Length: 429
Image (tube, rainbow, N blue to C red; front, side, top):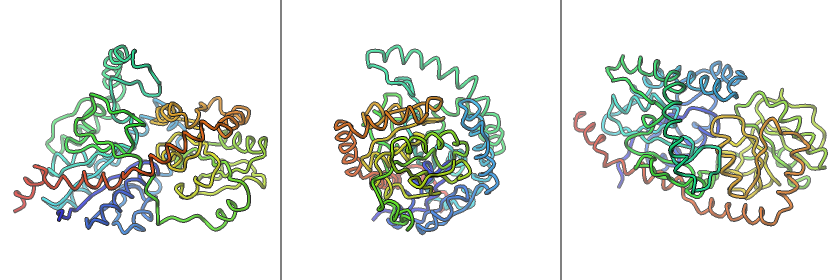
């Protein structure tokens, strides 16, 4: 019988970052562990619906302020804003963990933004599981994110990346992240950290990749305790159902095209205008998914809007999905076996998009080129291709066969033998 743990999950970010962590918490709770989720207030209802306890580390105002910042979607400015938001939550997140920590029985789980959990691992000696949703977070010298490179050029890529990554850490990443992080660490008597986003953000205990090796091949310089468990998209969300009006719309005609720029995107006017025009030009039904309806143009009768829909139920009833390249949406499209067009804006999205396109299951249109005139022929090609159809079907079968949550839980429960946990228990006794 596996020991029962107190599990504290710190999940920061958008829906694609947080919902899989809530699903992981639910799977651990079903195995008898007590699970507490720390995140932004938007996800409280989803966590509690799964029977998990929840505590917010931010406010609704914090979340709305972040989403209304247009610079978030500009590469360098977006990174600075993202990191500043993470650092703002660091002290409160750390203290929540400290208050809920039970010596010898607590396991911490966090995504890349959970810096409070990473610091708590050092002060509380509680084992930490770092969960990465996207391959780009496991930085490697052997691959260039967002580019497909022939293996014969790997030595050149490695030489370039070795210099480039060090330079970016020194001149871009560390100046943004290290001062505030190290100031907080100093308050706790911890030494300063350099190259915050190189190796320190990965737990020394266990790193889980919520994507499969056929999407991102493991690299020689990844942490040796990294395990890829697969996309969690194969795990249906029994706690979410399709809205009645949406279900009626889906049944009233041919499968629609689904469009979403992501749950956090509040500046998608051009995206939605081009999407509606493409539906009209092609004579296809469309569904716009956004929590920010003020971005939408007037919608014709053949196009509808919903603020939210469970993609594991919606996408199998869609013809294709056009989205931002977020890993959660991409994984759901893989599981549904439908073609996808990605319009990547920032962060991990361009790298995810290139990987998807290399698999042959869809296409990429960069935001400046995203117009109805560009989208129409792209969708026609994807939807009429028998090769794309077979590829999507084969990928869906691989996703369905994966046991992402079960394997993740098995790996986490194996930490019962962690020297940290035993030492923590000994101190407590």
